Each structure stands twice: as structure tokens, then as C-alpha cells.
Image (cartoon, rainbow over all chains, first blue to last red; front, side):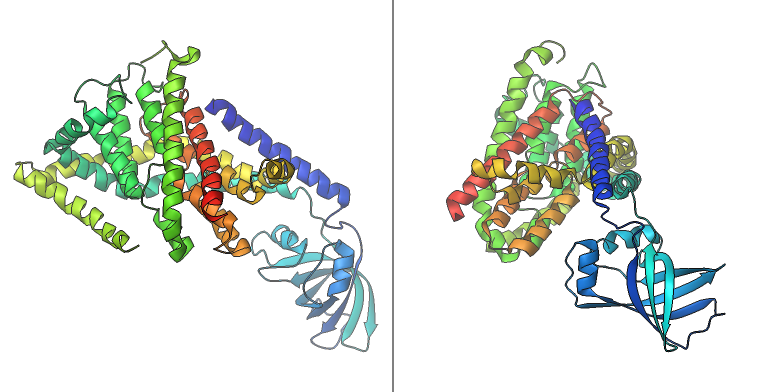
Length: 320
Length: 175
């Protein structure tokens, strides 16, 4: 099933990205190739030989909105501008900074991917008023296939993130796996197993009596209930390792593993995770009841689903 | 809630209590700790391929705008059955990524305000379900299990139950 979901995510991503880009292309959302009239107030007097001119571009908000067909909040947009003269052509660089109105928000990340604060284009039909004011038409560099690029970039970025996340677990993982080892040698796990066996046995009928996996599972569930997400993961991994020792086919999940995962992914927790407390502030108090009730629902359904699937044809006798 | 303040003691009590207990039982605590901790690195490295596979696919999916499209397409249908479409992004993103769902919730708080019903629903949903795909990647990755059988299906059904329960319970309590 994971094979199909995984492939589905990737294929759907490309499909929706292409679809969105074709839609942009059809509407010419970025007005590629169309002349954009603007006024430039130069910092110094105009000089026909100068290779770089600086100034301020002044664009009326209503004109911008009419050109792109998207509303803007500002009545007038003013941006620092640089004009570069290269072999008879005039290049324009509009310094929009870290955020820009309408389609420019996307264009700035494409025109200068490194700094992401410029709109670039070519200037034509320059007309001089006095010696410090210009009127001209700008044709902005075309923006195309935004989503397709974004999707590819996301794949690269998230591959990095995945490694960071995994390596970031090393410390907490080492701490808890070390403590768990002491707990095992000190007999805490054995005691725990004896205590929780009657409760957990019905969910994991295939485990041998007194197996340490039950202890690790109990610890993991307790850590989850107490909202100790950091501790719960190493304990869960400890439980998986214990379950794996009983697995005759190491690359295939056992019924016990699937049941454990179903309980775990449905998040048995009675204390809210710290992130939620931080986001909701005092409002968290009145949410405790609905969270507890919803958790019970999802956990019960998870257990019921795992129990049922274990008895369905494709998975029944194949494997422990 | 006042009693929640005392939960800060759970962690220190465990971290001190386990070695203390071990000491009384004659365990060579330091040596055992180091032996166990050694595995931390191996586990982290072992889950890398599983995590890369899951996270990059989810990252692409989020970047593609497929979610916005789904919300738009399903909006009228959801409204018809009494499910607020505003909660749908949270329902889709929650099993996929933890940081992503924090972002969605923060956005919703900014847009609708802390006291709105949809934010309460989304927060309940956030608190009552887990990042299913992440958990599956990490837990199965740690023991190198590639064939996950029905674990994903069971996890997603549990998530679905969490979504329905969050919406139903919140509209019953606060609606």
C-alpha cells in the first residue's frame, strides 16, 4: 500500500504542478513579453554615456493592478532601480526587497534566485523629461514553469531535511536507549511487563509470555500519554527492535508491529504536545476534553482496523 | 490547568530514577548506559533512507499545490455533509508532516482567530492524531522493515476517525 501512496504522491505532484503552470501560461499570469510602462526618477542627471544609472521607479497601484489583473494594497509602488547599459540595450533591475505585490512575489524568486529581491527586465522606448526623469516601457524577464521548478526544488530540499531530522535524533535516541538499557539490566522492564501483560496481551496475542517487547510498548504508550514525544520515539524503536527479534522474515512487518504502529500513529495522548500549548496559549484548557475524546476514538478505530486487517484474506495466514 | 505544571517533573524523575534504581540493583550503570547509547547513532543512520523517501515525496506534494486544489474541489461536497472545508487542509497535512501541520494551524489562528470553531477543530485534530507517515518511516526504518503490510491503512483509518471525531466533538461542545 505504501508503494502506491508513495508513487501517487510523486506522480500527483508533477501532475498538479504541470497543470498549474499550463494554467498560468494560458492566462499569461506573469504577462511575459508585454510592455509595462513606468516612470523613473534618477538620482543624478541623465548621461547618455553612463553605463549604470540609479534612481527610483514609481508605479501607480491601480496601473499595476490593471496590468496583472490582481489587486494591490498600495496606491503607489516605489522601488530603488538600477539601469545597466550593455551594447545598446538597457537592462533594468528593480530592487523590490523581501516581499513584492501580486505576481512579482513569484518573479523575484525566479529573476534572481540567489538574493530573491530583484525584478529584472529590459527597458525600451526611453523618453527623457528634464534631466532627471525618464519614462519607458519595461519587458520583464519571462517567468515560466514556476510550480514544476518548485516541486523539483522541494524534492531536493526535503531530502536534505530528512537527513537533518534523522541525524538530529542521534542525541535523544542515544540518551534514551542508554537509559532503557539500564532499565533492562535493572529488571525494570521485566517488572513492567508483568504489570501490563494482562492489559496488552489481547492486543498482541502472538508475543511469547513475559516478552520484553511488551515492556517497551508500555513505556512508549506511557511516554505518549504524558506528551513526552522525545522519549516516546526511542522507546517505540526499542519496542520495534524487540518485535523484530521474533520476526522470521526481517523485511516484512509482523501483526504485532502493525498493531503497535496503529496504536502509535493514532497518538494516545492525554497531555497536549508542547507545540499545541505554545500555539493555542490559554485556549488549550478547554480543548483538553475534545482532544482526549478524539484520541480515544482514533485509537479505538486504529486498534479495530489493525485487528480486522490481521484477519482479512491477503494477510491472514501468510506471516506471524 | 494547574496540575499540568507538575508534568515537568516526569522527565527528570525518569532520567534520575532509572540509573538510581539500576544502582540499587547492582547494575554497572555507566557501562550499561554507554552500551545502550551506542545504538542511537546506528538507528539514526538506519532510518535515513526511509525518511528521505517519505519526506521528499511529501515535500513535492505540498509544493505542487495539489492540496489547495483538493480543498477547492471538495469544498462544496464537504459543506453539504456538514464538514467545514476550512479544516480540510489540516486533515490532509496532519498525517503527512508535523512541521507542516504546525504551519497550517498557525495560519488558521492568524486567519480565523483563536476562538473560532474551525481553529478549535483543527487544534483538536492536531492534538489527537499523529504524523502517521513519519512514525511509519522512523519505526519501520529503525528495524529495516520495507514491507509495511496494512500498517499504513490502519494508521490512516485511525486518522480519519480522529478527523471525524474532532469535528463532531467540537461542534457538539462549542458549536
